[in-house]
Image 1 (cartoon, rainbow, N blue to C red):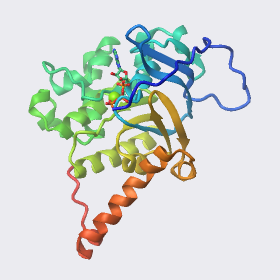
Image 2 (cartoon, rainbow, N blue to C red; image 1 turned 90 degrees about the vertical axis):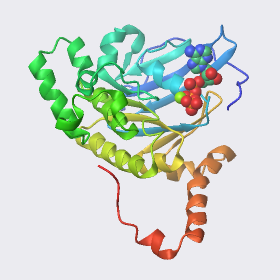
Image 3 (cartoon, rainbow, N blue to C red; image 1 turned 120 degrees about the horizontal axis):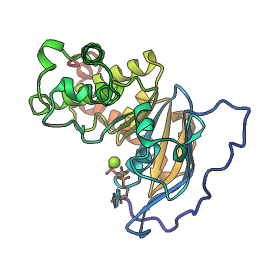
Length: 290
Ligand SMILES: Nc1ncnc2c1ncn2[C@@H]1O[C@H](COP(=O)(O)OP(=O)(O)OP(=O)(O)O)[C@@H](O)[C@H]1O
Ligand SMILES: [Mg+2]
């Protein structure tokens, strides 16, 4: 567990956008701060980070380092204490939180499906709140089930407890995409899955990200997953942004923690290579479930 950091940056509120020449990022965190327990617990401590339109950013960091808190500040599930969050240049404080959440798909850390609602109702909840006609919602649900590779006939009317963990995560992704957002925030979407399902879901989502031209921010504990899926990686520790960049840029970081995180997948791969017979490591067919 990360320990509490020692300072809280008292950031000024949003000012005007200084640089009008570079393209507007999809998301910009500007010196963002958030504390809990009347300021005693500093969860996010002066984080500045931008996510370009169409980019896939992974946020990596230990438990309690502030990853979920940062993500929830982007769509105003919680409010900042200082600094500014912009979505496509707009200060989120100036936007209606409900409208903002419709523009941004969110996949919750624990799946977050409504247990008493069927798969179809879970996926269709945002369009229904938007007043979309029932026939249109039904067609959209089918389209989304196809998109996340769930069988319409078998899964549409099931309840969350009748699904496997991987299927539930697929429904979570479908629900996040239901209102056709162009930004998707994912909080450890594939965390509790077996490695094959996890790998397959990650690849599938990466394809969706490309095809639908999404901007994605994905929290993960797994540096290998971050390197494989994301364009850029942000590393958080004790509420602060320790480093950000491509895997190559991160590998020249001076932060021992960042280097340690980056080295772990390679060390594991080397240890596996040494332990597994050559045929198992080279010739494994792809058996990822669909
Ligand atoms: N609503 C809240 N009230 C009080 N403290 C909170 C609240 N939400 C988060 N915290 C605290 O803020 C810190 C950061 O929490 P956060 O959920 O952002 O961590 P995280 O990096 O997502 O961790 P994990 O990897 O375990 O999900 C933690 O110490 C947590 O206990
Ligand atoms: Mg979290």
